[in-house]
Length: 172
Image (tube, rainbow, N blue to C red; front, side, top):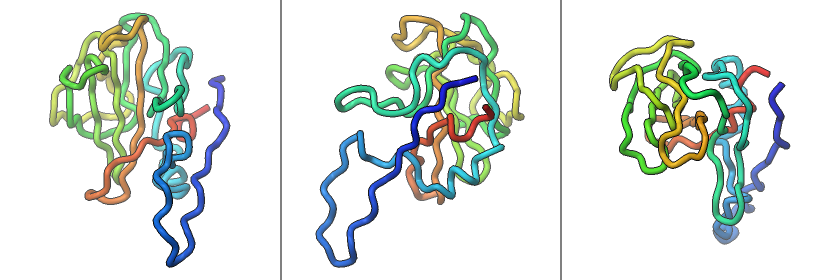
């Protein structure tokens, strides 16, 4: 019973031979590598925590955007891996995210879990879908206990992972 934001679509590419397009503002920048990426990600992920979405994916005022969803949940609620993978980061050295865990999954997918009170995994640890990663907290400057959750996709290892709206991939 989570709200579903309106879909956004990237602008078409310029015609062959035309000048480069003007830089995109955060409001018009594509959030997803491709529609095929979304299709490939459906059914792969589960919700990492139960709660209320307090900030959806997308633009949050001038020059700001949320590259994931923020889920209000009671302090100490278990945060679980949305899919099987390997922990590639577990720490508190990314400003604004507090205690953060990043999990790399097969086929170019990465998930991020921020503002954790407690981290239960270590770097290079293999995790299964649903395995505990930590607990909901209030770290990184947020004003209430919550989980900031992101899903990112890179079609090839050399591509930069781009944020994908989790609401397009998670079960309803």
